[in-house]
Image (tube, rainbow, N blue to C red; front, side, top):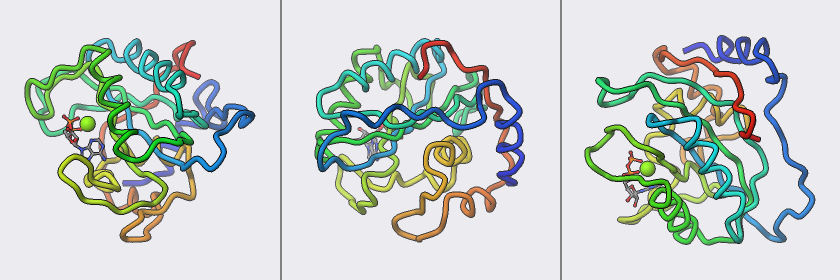
Length: 195
Ligand code: ADP
Ligand code: MG
């Protein structure tokens, strides 16, 4: 897949000259950087904005950058509504499992039900990367095991962290993306309350 296709579209889209950066004032001392993948296909704009607000209010979590939102075709189980996907870069004082716990609480607060694998969801919050840590436990695998196969993750990830490299292979996100088959996805108009 050609990443330039997306970068060109991105640059042409209103308000997308660069992904939005928050002020770093108040950043957490000795925080770790983490990348969070967000996805929803039930009231997706509203749920992504709510998840972002809850993350920003969570003790020990400080969002640093928000990607654009991308409309993507459902993956794995294709007979369902399109998804909106985004990536948020944050700084956090939470340990990896604490961060996962926070994300799962936010998923529950937004009414996430785990009915079927890859089925429709109000919100999915995944830790894509936590400070380059490589970890494999029953509850948490880092980096996220499928991120290098998914353009709908890599494209928004590049928006918030253009120099990111996969912690295991060392390959830059841009190169991983270039090796993927084309996926149907497009940036959407920024919702007012997104960043
Ligand atoms: P998926 O995200 O694969 O569609 P779920 O959101 O239902 O599915 O997550 C299933 C399980 O994946 C969670 O209970 C969680 O413990 C586990 N998991 C492992 N690694 C991660 C990670 N990096 N980020 C989020 N969840 C993870
Ligand atoms: Mg998940």
